[in-house]
Structure formats: C-alpha cells, structure tokens
Length: 346
Ligand code: OGA
Ligand code: NI
Image 1 (cartoon, helix red, strand yellow):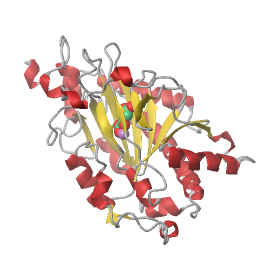
Image 2 (tube, rainbow, N blue to C red):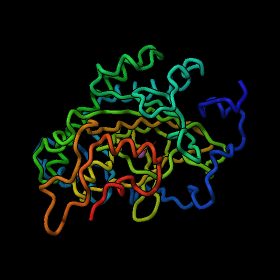
Image 3 (cartoon, rainbow, N blue to C red):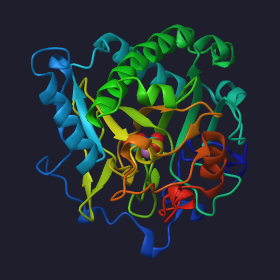
Image 4 (cartoon, protein in one colour):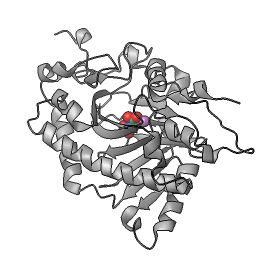
C-alpha cells in the first residue's frame, strides 16, 4: 500500500524523516519543549491511599481536597490495583499495537459514537491539524455489554483487560466517595449524580517522532468526563499546566495519575478544577498511556450540587445531560477553550 493511503500513524511513519505537513502546528501553537519545567519539584502531589480507611482518614481527605482545588491533578500509590494487572495491561497494549496492520485495521473506525474502535489523532472528521497518536477506545462498564466487541488478538486481550477495568473501577469508586466527602457531600453523592455511570478506556500509542517540536501527541485539553485515572508507561510525555507554565509529569512505577474532569468541575460548582494538560512526543521512544475515563451515563442530568450553591457562590453552570455535553466535546475537537464555557451561566 502507498504511504499516503495509510489510515493509522503507526503504518505511515516507517522511513519518514520529517513530520508530514498535516501534523505540523502553526508556530504560535507549538510545544516549545525547551520551556517546559522538568524537575519533580513543583510537580503534582502524590497521595498515599494506604490509610484512607485508617486513623489518618481525615488527613487523606484533606490532601485530596487540596489537590482537586489547587492542582486538578494528583498521583496515587497504594491504590489497590495489583501490580500484576498493571503489567499485564501495559503488555497487552504494546502487543496490540504491534499486531499486523491487517489485524489492527479490523477495529478501525472514524466514528466517535462507536463503542469500540481503533482510530488516530483525535477526530479525523472534524480536525484541521492531526495529532501524533493512534488509539484504541473501549467502553468497559457494564463489562458484559461491551466485551464481545473487543479485539480477540492478542488472545488474552479480553480476559486481561476485563480484570484491569474491574479493578480500576474499584479505585474510581473509592476516589469518588473520598471526593464527595471532601466537598462535604454525602459519600454516594457523585456516584448517584452519575446515574448508571459509564467507563471508557483509551489505549494511546505515540510512535517516536522525527520532529517532536512541531506537533503534539495530544494538544492542550481538559478531559470531558468526571475523573480520569491514567496509567503511564515509563516514558515521559504528559505535561500539566501549572501557574501558566507547562510542567512534565515523570511517571513513577505502579502509580496512577488522577485528574479532575469537566463534569466534576460542574458538580463542585467550580471548586475543583479540570486542568489543561497535553501529551508531547519524542524522537527515540514509543510511548503508551492508558487513561480510564469514568463518566456519568448519557442520560444523567449534570449540574452544580445544590449544597454548593449559595448567595456568595451562585450556580456557575446550567444543568445539562451528559449526552449533550459529550456530543459537543467530540465535535469541537481539543480546543483550548474549555467545552464547559458553552454551559456557563452568570
Ligand atoms: C488523554 C490524555 C495524556 C497522556 O488521553 O486524555 O490526556 O499522557 N492523555 O497520554
Ligand atoms: Ni486528557
């Protein structure tokens, strides 16, 4: 097949020494990698969940509150997801992207409404500039509704990924309780506000890039869902906007990166922040990252919790269904202006 007809980046790049023009950002919108803060000092907080149910409970809740309010991002260790499941998940992802093109292409679709699909960039139907990424996107809760759509190669894909999703969901539910509590809401407030809930996952694959200063793996964006649990491999690439500066987050083994999504910002009535982040690429190494996006169900009605609305802090958003938000999110692409602005009031 001629290079120009390749749909996935993985299959396009062999022998490419320059970034093809559709991936090149205008000069005003490049990563400026020399300007990025790389020291771990000033990076996002690391929270140990070991004692969440112990005597230090209120201290951990306070750490979570501070992180959600000031950083929008934190890392968690002793999170309860077994190391073996994490290793399996990363290995399966690596193996999947190494499958022959013909096997991978069975999963290809550029329709964002499909619940299982392999695609590239972000939304090839609507975007002007492409991103240096291929991704497999899966819906994974309730599992039994979706597992039959998942890839059958590598052969252990369904089994290993199911285990991982179920375990990560357990962590999400713990965090949603803790976050509800940190907002002085009933422990089950956020889960109840999310209706039947949904869990999506992406297996992001960022191939090495000959000119990483010209393009992004993913440009600056906020996550549209409730909360994201990111499993990074050991190659740096995630950067978070802190006090106006991009800061690299260096992966720590067996540690997840958690961030507040747009829906949490709405429910908390702007107390908690859905923060801009991006993925950059590098010359030498492929990179894999596996975000779990926990979401309200499409029919859930999302709005600021009434307990968090007062004379001094009026409701910042109108209510909307998650389906309405989700449609706009994929259509707009990863614009810097947060999709949430469309739902602001006052
Ligand atoms: C995302 C995302 C960051 C990364 O998929 O929404 O922000 O490091 N990924 O891949
Ligand atoms: Ni993101």
